[in-house]
Image 1 (cartoon, rainbow, N blue to C red):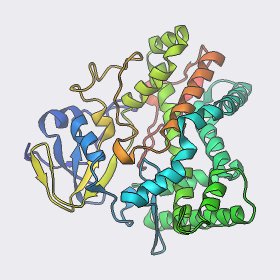
Image 2: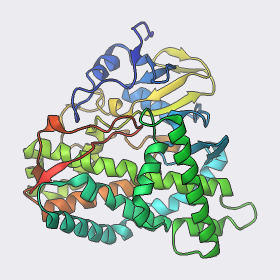
Image 3: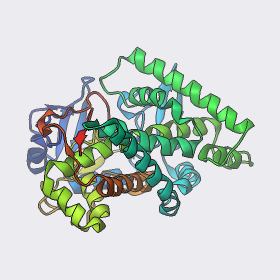
Length: 404
């Protein structure tokens, strides 16, 4: 389909904190390969149909932008690139180097390893809920549970002190900056982050432990094996950001969506075996996922009957694709029994999210624990009063006020 419509500004405006932009459906139906204007004033091509987004995510010609691209510092698959003080850090993006990186890091994020971590995650969730209840209702579920749980888990996996979580939060926001911070603020935060992680890696070299970075460092000491020093640094930073920011936001959004219609919560109370399905449907139904995955084309690519020339910046809108009626019956309805559920929230192909087993396990553990401990949980504010996080590449809610 030709791009004959008026260029629209991106990100698109939202109707409400949990509602999708009205423009998604029109674009999918009338202009699935659309021209959009970014906050920088640059133009890009936006894809909103499931078949186009899935195909592009798996296409090797859909490549990481240059490191000075402010909207691409961290990819959802957890492979970030950082620009700081003129230098760059990146993990391998394609070919054998990328496969080598995924093999080295991916074994820490298998479903089997996550199952082994599940009891400790449940214990953390129990303690955080105890603390929230002790402070009294109403509470902020995001601040009390949603943010600290994934931070504690990823900090333990990386061997960094969770006491530094406030610093991590600031650096993570800067890492994912779209319009919230100035370039000077972003650069300063990134330099601090690089210095911190460099020092942490040096400490792990001197005094290794049973954590991801210590193991990666040990494996990198062999000839031609493992990760380079730059890859270690980029990996540590990317995992810390991707390992807590997106999941912390998703916990709050998931619970808000489930409580927005009380029948959803009641259905889970009546049948807790639906928790895994509910997590997948929450991941699909989330309209506030964020900016989308932004890459450029390394050669001409045909999408939807239209040839996009080499160098085109393409944005894959996974949340828009997740509402595609051609793939999901009743796409605008939250169906806790939906199966199969081929949502694209974690991407697709060789660059699908490396930490998806971790995110799924954390979301399941939080939901199981909340249903068991706080069956009367409800939102303590009207849906329309919830505030979206603005100015970052990932979408979330500022607070999730609840009572029980």
